[in-house]
Amino acid sequence: PRRKRTKDSSGSVYEALFLRGEGSDVQIRALGAVWNLHRVYLCQSGYFASMFSGAWRESTMNTVELQMPDDNIDREALHEALGSLYNDSVLIQPSRVVPILAAASMLQLDELIQQCGEIMEETVSVHTVCSYYYSAGSYGLPSIRTMCFQWLLHNLMTHRGEELIREISLDIMEELIVSSELVVIEVEMDVYTMLKKQLQPAWRGPRRALLPDALWFARSKRELDGTPFLETPQGRAFVPVFRHLRLAYIVCDLPSARIIDQDALIPATWLTPVYKDQWLALLKAEQTRGPRRVEVHVSNFQRNSMRCGHQVHREETCSWRWAGFNFSWDLVVCYSNRRVTFRRSALNDPHGLGGSLLWQGKIAFRLCLVSLDRAGRTVLRQDTEYQVLSLGKDEELEVASLENQDVVFPIYVACNFLRLPRERSYQEFNIHRHPPTS
Image (cartoon, rainbow, N blue to C red; front, side, top):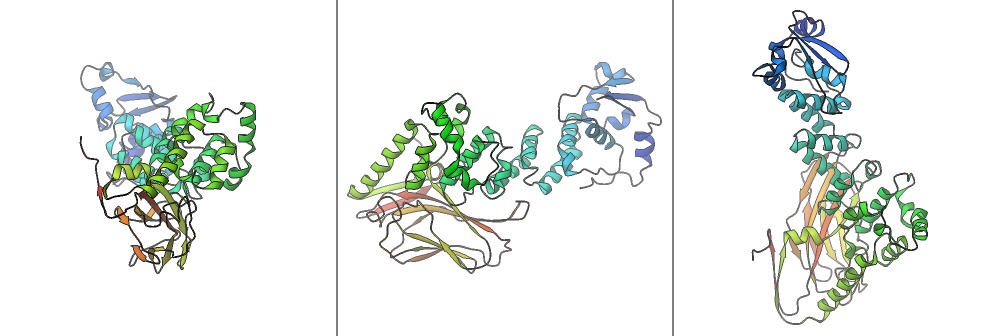
């Protein structure tokens, strides 16, 4: 808990005037309670200053009945907010910050609002992030709202995600799923698996069991005569969220494609164009001839790139590949001595659609390293610029370094990839921050 700056070093004013109501000239009634207070103190509040000046009926009344416009305000919160006008310090527990913030906002107590924001910033966690996010939007704390959203982007797909899914509304989930900043653990298929959990709020088993064994989906498919769940009245509310899945990076992996088909959540009208586009992209990359210029716009990269990630548990050398990585290369990612490198394997073993055909392609990428404390707050975040990557066989490139950085493990390595068309004679690749104007 944090205390606001001292206004009066003694507690005599608070005890005598606020708690005992000595010399009161106005009575405040609300929520079944009565406070005998003083206009000169109340006028520190913008709410009461407006009420007691001008033509308001209450300006000459000795008793004022307050109507609570916000269900978040309870008697204790209102008591703390009124008492802050008399007290030399206010002690706010994190569990009480939202009701007190609501009361402070109604009474226009800027200093108390600021203190609530400071407490929220320091105590965001899996237990508070959703309530902080919603209340920050309601009570005009945009920086806190942004901080909470960033916390969700970092933590939703980690082990903390299991506790969050039941609290996140569909509109917030949609914003998270569409973002290229979402830290995805492993690949895009894991985002789909997480969303399946939101469809089953009563599920208490491990996430892995949802993937092949969620009998609820099979039963739903039988009961609906094969109608995809998202085309049913019950499922339409979830359509905006599932629409932002990057299906192109799910259907390129055979086990994932089979699960999508078995679950019967996603309509065929969504999947057919994706399969068509993937096949045409393969043919174009293999059969297109001649020089051409390719421009990559950041907005397109953010919307269409493949999201994948990995968790580095401790300070030791490790390497990995991402399943379903179909950008024509056997790309090995390595963490060693606080450096992340990409290496192009010389093995002639394709790891994805058309890998043996497209090995000379290029990709645009951006890598992000995130270190979180136990509450999920960001200790370190390091982002690379948007870059175009072209590696020969067994060629290696260092893409990020954490030397001289304070690192807390685990570290999450999140990367976005976008495959670029294959070059035949020459190509130029430009990355633009904004699309060209017409």
